[in-house]
Image 1 (cartoon, rainbow, N blue to C red):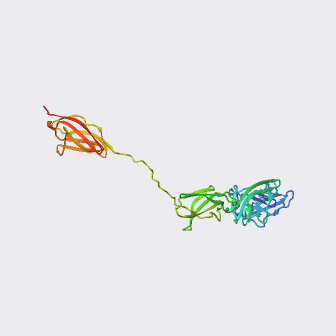
Image 2: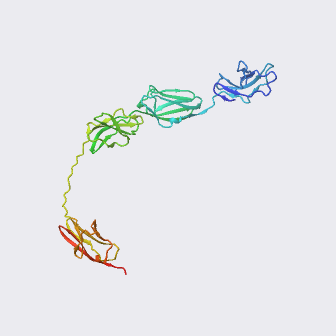
Image 3: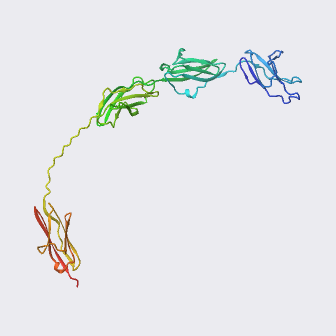
Length: 397
């Protein structure tokens, strides 16, 4: 016996090991009430399948069942079930098999279809009931169809009022199983409120607003901020999914006038309309003024002054030598070189150079005649200064 319920029983068996030389024409299934002697044939014609279901039985009866193999020669010895079969449905505990997608909040938008198929198990046929937030369903809004193995929950066009916790109860005799399904119907949110311009400075403006009164039955995910230049009239997004209720819009163009608008956004999308600033905001040119600093003119005039004097030197006949000293003064002093109080004029043996206040006198291949006292004199309109040194030229022995 494979299965039994309150009106049928299903049997299966193995084919005979020796069907005979004439072959097998089929099987005949017979049954009788327990305690009686009359066998009733269940099938009108022999059949070859090793499985058969006897239908239209009476619940509560006890039946003895046997199967015979048939061929052209005759009928085999019957195979009889060892125990009488009680015709009754086997009890199966009620169990709701909630689909994975319904184990968390089931979200739909306003106007969409809600069509839920929830399978279950249980024998005899379970009784299925639905409630919403502890109250019976409004059958004008919800259509429920039940079968032996599942229930269908159907709403043709969802409304916000359809949101809530729906409880499904499955009962078999005194046993039951429950499952809660949370449905959330959402729509696009309302317009942000109290949009205002807080401050304008340089290339920037600061905006503030309040959340919308209607969030569309879904958490506000953020706000989209846009700007529009009066010249073009086109809107451009400057901030997307801002999670705060304030922002700063930067990089505006000086001399242009702008409008600003803000959309709210939830899981359903952006609000149908936006909050718009009441007046144009003009980005003014920043006025700058320059006031030169007053300062006292410094007197750089200075009389000549030697910061590094000449030093006595000894050199060898025929070997060039240099004399050095340093001077300062403004205006730049005129430098005069003298030998033994006589000014050195255009003499090819002497080269005078002054650079960055450093004075030098080159003496090419001096002879004993070039020895003596050398003087460097610095002269400008504010005065003069001089330094001396002695040069000794020796002749090699």
